[in-house]
Image 1 (cartoon, rainbow, N blue to C red):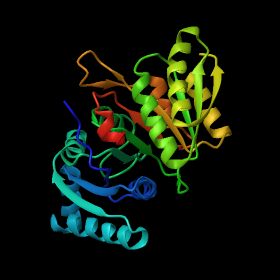
Image 2: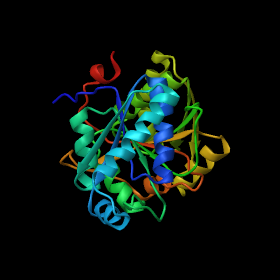
Image 3: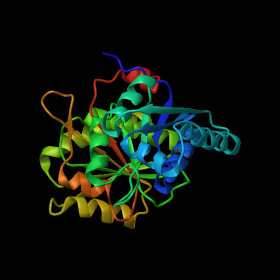
Image 4: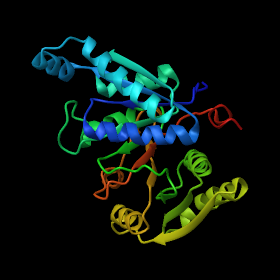
Length: 278
């Protein structure tokens, strides 16, 4: 089945500062990619409790979304749609992404606080249920695009998906890819496939090898020391190919203490020609 893409970045928001940061970074990406933004608020139990506490009705959500959309449009000349949908953040975000044909999802994650609890395990549920790649954003602002991207290679599974997305982002942002490979001979073929495509597409890259001991820390330390703007990882599909799994080292990278944005790619049966217009 083909996945229809409409050049949209979906940004869920609970109107917190970290979600505002995710929105700002999504807007910057939209300008580079010439995409539009879709702001989403999922009206769940937390929203209803907050509205009741504030003495407001459901229309207050649409008002807040509209104000954000108007601000983005006037300041950045980026087209913005707004969506308020009743549901649950764990399922509704993914459903909306599919319904509107989003290409990317920017997810602000709170650490330990936030109205809709987009924290550790909660954020992971959103990431692994998404039909499109998710860029996980913490509090640290990044507003100059992505010029250096770290691509950790830990297995030979699914090199094509991460290669195509890495190439797409690198070409649109004029970024360099730093391939950080576990020093294992069985990964050499996967890296060969990746670099062959990068060569064909004119993507700048370099390869670094590292030992397997505490790989996530090595990735984070490398990304921090080299002032990376993004880490790009890939989830592993379970046998049904409808659910995705993240290892503990993936989670450590997603919630890295340097707060570098992390793009999480769930393997899908994409129609690459439609997504990347090739």
